Image: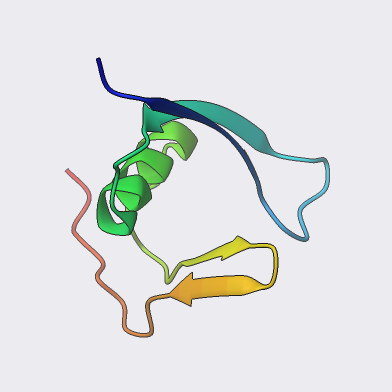
Length: 69
């Protein structure tokens, strides 16, 4: 049975606070986590993204926008 991470995701600089909780396999890679977050927030991949955990940040520097169905 895979180990599961329960994540609390909050948007910076947004009021009122926007937050989602998701559960993902502990082995998930950032590209797949990005897809999970897109789905959780109802987004269509129209913007750049960054993951920040404490002092460490991972980000994409070029847009990868897809067309909306």
